[in-house]
Image (cartoon, rainbow, N blue to C red; front, side):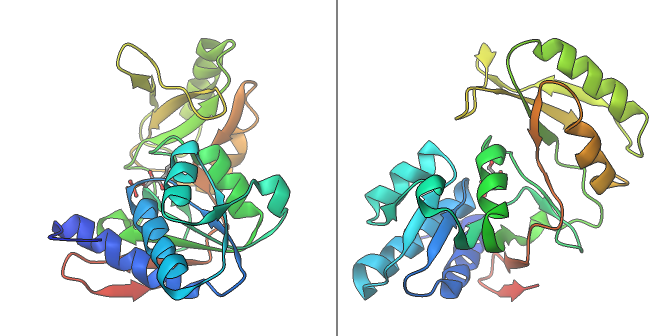
Length: 236
Ligand code: 5RP
């Protein structure tokens, strides 16, 4: 499954491999999105195919749903599963309180709903994703396409009054057209550099008309499994 991996892929792989050890027979498991989560889905698929582990996967994107089916994991919707035992997902940044920035891969909305509907959320990440203060990674905010420029202007106004270092915003593009999420929405990336009060920002952003959800995951993650390029793994 792995062949010769680059240090970054090795870090993601070892974190993913360790995290699937938390999955027990019969569990309903939220399956995250992104390159690290994809390693986890492959590792879980191997446990299903070769060790007979019985799991039901609840994917957080169409990409993950396709991968999960391809590796032999039974997939159902969140509405079918209703409540999950565990979600394993990647992150763009995590801090010392296990608060996160997510959504670099554009799946933050389903990811937040699925993680919140889980008894436990385990994040898997390479060590470079650990930060003292969130914000160096652009914060994704999902908005509906209608009036998105108005929502963007309101976000800029709101953000400028808070404890952040920058307030530059950019509509995420896919070539010449806006990037479209699985829910048919747009993403505005906020270049804030440093988020002084992530909890406050998360609440304020969701008050802006047109904003569906933001990529700050506050008090949602229970554990982070950190992988290193030399194969070491650490759990916090
Ligand atoms: C997708 C996400 C991903 O988990 C996040 O972007 C990390 O991705 P990767 O594992 O590829 O670095 O939030 O919406």
